[in-house]
Length: 163
Image 1 (spheres, rainbow, N blue to C red):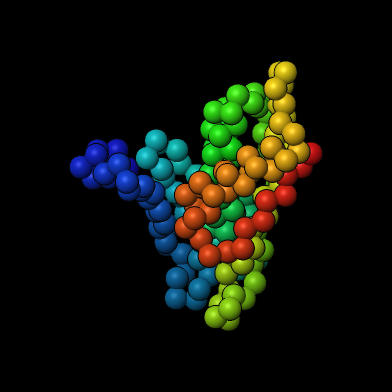
Image 2 (cartoon, rainbow, N blue to C red):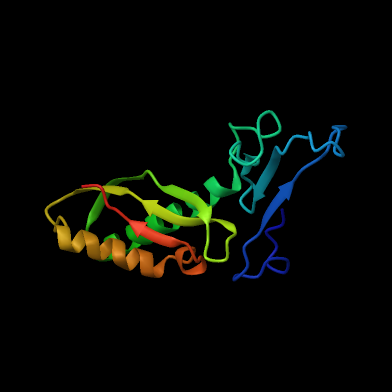
């Protein structure tokens, strides 16, 4: 994957997805959905269809499926904005964890989609300047408003901070 600015200007983000048949019987629809997702920084992540969509062994449950990647992208973006905003407000975050969940169901058009994403972030703070409950909610609200990924999706977004 190229990191050359001429290939990917500053406002473009690339990912490469690579799959090969490797001699499998494609015509019978019994081929592996396992693939590799490559990112600009050099990370390679094994990908696959979800076993909920394509049964095992054609799916690989140990790989990341697109639905999981979607939920992780939203949770990661929210966390990064949360950390940035908390730091600017002089709150010291020692640890942050999120058990995010996406729900697949039919959308208003009757198509299968991730229709709801619930974030359950838990931030642990230290120092003398700790956020009140209202300030914590405001941090999450602002992070959600700023998150590029959340601003890009139609799914209902729910933020449920863990206290």
